[in-house]
Image (cartoon, rainbow, N blue to C red):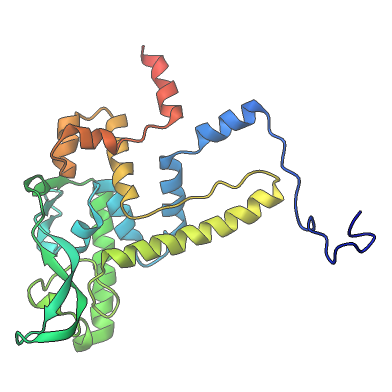
Length: 265
């Protein structure tokens, strides 16, 4: 009314939509459908044809920390025995002195590969046939990069001097850092969410957004191991947890899985 009689210059309600009415059953079904497994699968499906799909798939199938994955060398992966040896990780530190020992005017952040902080992180991680295929597919990508760039490949990567066979690298041969993976997860998640927003609007329902980050694959892996009935001690050994309570912390059982347990009791 105020807008019609020009008491205000614009209609403050323009563009607003009335809330969609949902029954209690609709809400229950929505909550049951929304779970970690579904979100991770949506993410993997969406990034299947992107450059770093193999990295994210391997994270979901091994429970590796992103720093551990970025520090992997080909010698750490035994494709015949189907296992990964974890003994290092990538992190960023402040550098105060240059290569000649002179103090710099202002410190800068640099990437380095170091040993894990805890003894439990030194471990062997078993891998499946599908994960072996993931590593093989990535190896082909890296070989193509080296062929394309020739002698220029990795020339600006100082880490290659001490770790010449890093697995996850960028196209020109730089070390693929955890921060890059976080950015890529956000980019892909944003693409999924934009599409989901439009789909939900056309279907007159609430959108189901996802928020994937590299560490979430670790939650996914632990949860799948628990659902398959793996011994918690074994899960802790594989994931590098020093205490079982950490394994419990990473477990995110869906309501659907919990309800299915009625069939066994």
